[in-house]
Length: 195
Length: 195
DNA sequence: GTCTATAGCCCGATAGAC
DNA sequence: GTCTATCGGGCTATAGAC
Image 1: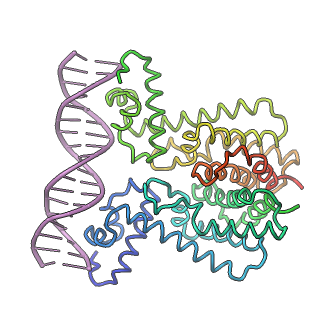
Image 2 (image 1 turned 90 degrees about the vertical axis):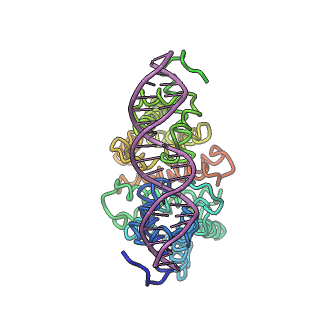
Image 3 (image 1 turned 90 degrees about the horizontal axis):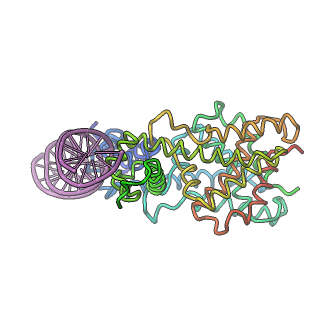
């Protein structure tokens, strides 16, 4: 595959996408650069010129993915008013990504500290999850969510939603998440709602 | 370290324990046999004689860990009568292991399909988790748990509990899980209880 | 800027002494 | 049964032509 004449940024996007796909399948250390070359059609030299080394490529994959999630989440939050609606928007986004871009969700759930880099924070301290925490904090103030540890509430709500996504991706759930989304979102809300 | 004269079974337990510790830290592919040799004090030759190859060692680590969890869970279930009590026993066991043998819980949460073996099922389809499913099924029949998809209920309850364990292990929760256990268990139950 | 070819390293698995 | 030494293979990263 000859990619000499296409936009360099597009080429690196191909590399990032190919790398993420392979990282999900085999883990960071299970993926060799020559495989990324084959999957992306971009040569070894070009990859090293732009990313420096394998670890920095992995960091870029991580940053880009979380950024993408955060953008999608922000869009959906824009027209939501109640706390319950905002949390529902989070859940629905997670379910949609799981069904429509399973590679992205699987990456977000499975990325772990295989890389000893400070730039690679765990998913739970990413912007998207501190945003969920903020929404819940406001819900407690407004009396929509029962008082107690706000962190516990965030754990409970996201726990229900993310475990559903995880089990779906592992093939344990045969139906699309949309089929049981209402029930899951109700359960997640019941776990934290004020009486 | 010279281990010539100790019980061979004890030696292999040392290997399994060392391997699990290292797998948690660096992932299956990130761990080299010489590292396991150094950590366990057992030689390369002895490891290959007993386990055959690295992949079979990893399978043994996996099987032994799930078996250990299942034994602990069965013990705790013995004297529990109500559905709510049985599920609470599951939650408390998860929290205790997280605090007292974090390596074991981290392994259970992080082990993934890095190894292409059919023997290594995902955690969610292990005996321990089908047991939780059975408990919930009986709770629905008894009217203690709200009707609907029983699988959804199992996802919800275990989701809350396992996410708490996960965030604790990632260092996101500064306090021991026991400090917020009551609240978490109440939230998990609220998500599935009949009204 | 982009490519191919390869240096240098480390790993899994085995051979063979004890 | 257990050890150490080593082989063959595959990896990351770089050198150098275009």
